[in-house]
Length: 151
Image (cartoon, rainbow, N blue to C red; front, side, top):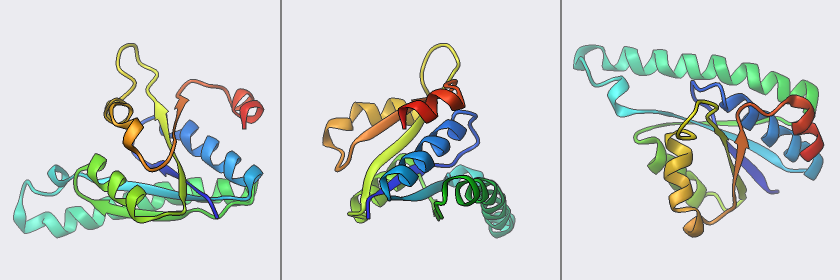
């Protein structure tokens, strides 16, 4: 089964990437894997509380994931899988894409602010030609209706 890999982070554009991935998976009989990466700087400030900070980050990610997962199950009939990693986001995303041959499409949301589309989009478009799967970039301000039309 082909899976759509989508990144869960604290950006607004992540919402449209989630919607797109779920809609495409539902219409193509695929699956969705959601990756969220805890950057190392989030928990290295005080070594004594590092484990507590990691656990809080995981809980926040799992709660955020459950909101998307419920929508995907209820509205699209897709049950996503969550992959939480710790490290540099780009490296962890690439490691997952390369290690899972079922990932058929990497889906990112583009930022809606003027200027750059976001750090991950910028970094991944530079190496898109060497990725083992296609990269789909979903505009962050695209309407739900337009997303439904194109999926």
